[in-house]
Every structure is written in structure tokens, then in C-alpha cells.
Image (cartoon, rainbow, N blue to C red):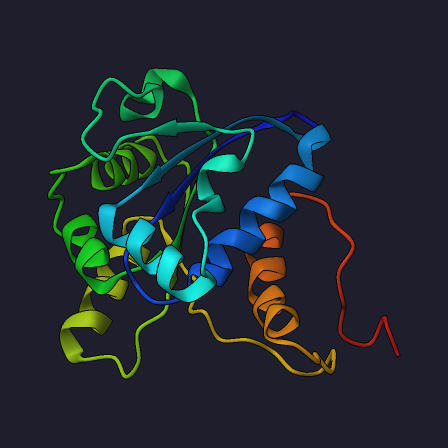
Length: 189
């Protein structure tokens, strides 16, 4: 299997636990990954500190980029990043992507991934959805993106918040094309 080059973008939507678990999992799956580039909005860092009580986001062995760094490799299709995961994806970020507004590295990278026909996974976390949100999800889907709402599953009988959130992250990892051990319906009875 070809090793993947993955962009992880973290926006200011609530749900920092999803981003943390994804980065933990990507670290464990390093044999399948060539490179991980991370970009976080200022609000994402603030939400992480508030929800998780730490600033450990910068302790991961990944390449971190500032939100306005248009010199980051994945700001161009020539860098050949395979997959972009926006986790959690705020509705503001989704709206900018849906309408082609590339005003920061997150929206620019998403624009590049879509134009290059590569995999964009937007883990939207907001609820309820307005018609504007739904239309933006439709537009990103029609452009080739995958909308993966942060809706956990419960058939694995999760016991902690982290286990509940991991059900979403496991789904995202599957969508990204990485091999992992996780609960599978009717296989773990």
C-alpha cells in the first residue's frame, strides 16, 4: 500500500476531542503514512485548551503550519497530499469551502484537494443544521468532498467520552483509506 500524505485541519467548532483522537490514531498508524501536515485556526487552539484542559496539540510529531502560511506544501496540488481531514469542521469553514473562498490555509488546502480530485473529509459537528448548512454540505459533496457528521455510534457499547468519540474517528480513518483495528458491526459479536 502506498503511504499517505495527509492534511489535518482543526477549526474552532466544539469537538477538540475528535482532533486529538485522530492525531493519536495517525501517530499509531505511522507505518501507513508518509507525512502529516497540520493547520489549526486560532479558535481551534482556544477550544482545545478549553475542552481538553491542555495545549498538547503541538506535541505531535507532525509538521505544523500557521493558518495564513500559503507557502505550506499542501497550498499547491504539486505537493500531492492524498487526503485532507477537517476535524471538527465549523460551518463557517464549510461555507467558505463550498463557495471557493480561499482566504486562509485551511480553505486553500481544501480548494486544492477538491480541484485535484483527491479526498476531502469534513467532520461537521454543528447541530441543528440550517438550510444554508445543508446547501453548503450539498455543494461540497457535489464537488467531490465527503461530509462525515460527528455522529457517534453506540453498538460497540462505548463507556467513556473518548470511546464514544473514537467511533467517529474510526469511521474517518476508514474513509481516509487507512487500515486499523476497530469495532465492526456483526464482526465483533
